Length: 424
Image (cartoon, rainbow, N blue to C red; front, side):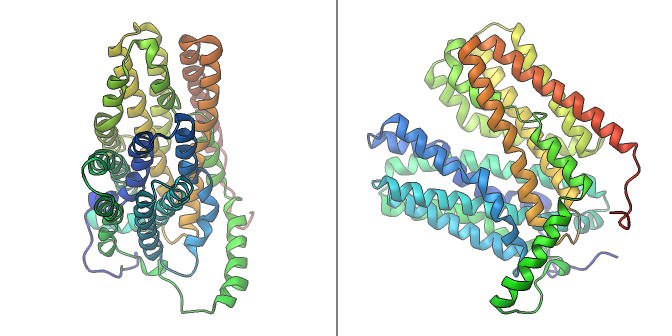
């Protein structure tokens, strides 16, 4: 019988997922309003690019702090505290916009806090899914896909909301007014946290001294981390995510090659704002429908294969603004759907009562960023040396090959017996 939760009322699944909007709100500020704000101050484009990259860098390295989220306190507390820190960081960054070093530092802290809040929430929600499925009379696979979809909808809507609200607010309101409003907007999704149940097994143990935690807690944590990397399921998931099976890094390159499609900067800007956020959010909601026919892992490979074929199909189309719009939206839609499936895989891999739930969620989701990095570099080099056609061929061809290889590997491994705990 599943453990009973500590709260008599449970928020609906869609609202639980939307509580992940904090990371989208902070990221949305860094991607669009920040460059506009700095450009208005006369900051050179090269410096703006460097500041934006530094502010987004926690998305790559903050998983190293993931183990902290599984020690001492509930993940709900960690999610709430880091959401508050993200809001404060963004508020101070806006107030310090004339001091670039302070602005950059506080935004790095804000984005790192938003990622930690999201990771704590992910580890927390993974343990809630079995209870949600039992209450709904459904399978955990389906409810995990539904919850994963709404977490990504929250991220996309957060991006779009911040892009519009911050740009308008910074233009029309004084700093002392808009800064706290933006900070409060970042923290607002955490208002859902009291209505998300906390399984009793995820609650902290009796209070212990900091010295005891430093000696015993972290030693136990490292032992469990070691055991985590010995699990075949975790290693296979890491391999799946680090291969270019669902990265669709071409998404990040298309904005820079818009001239090849005779698309104006204004057209690219319109495509990259609210339209893109709504398209991504809508794509995420397809996953619960598709999950009725397939589990998340084969679905992830199917999405990757479909997206790769879409990329190769673009070779047949004329280089026009309409083709750019189709390519830009299509690549973003399959990337959004692919990452939603990846989060569903994370939920399924973590399961109930996992003492390293937040650590595992941080590790697995950060692995999805790796192919975006190296495929982005590869796409850029290929375009610089050989043009758009070769970039399409390399990106789509490598992704399609990776999907085929991973599907074959998964099929072969599924035929092997799973080692028993006694043998490991």
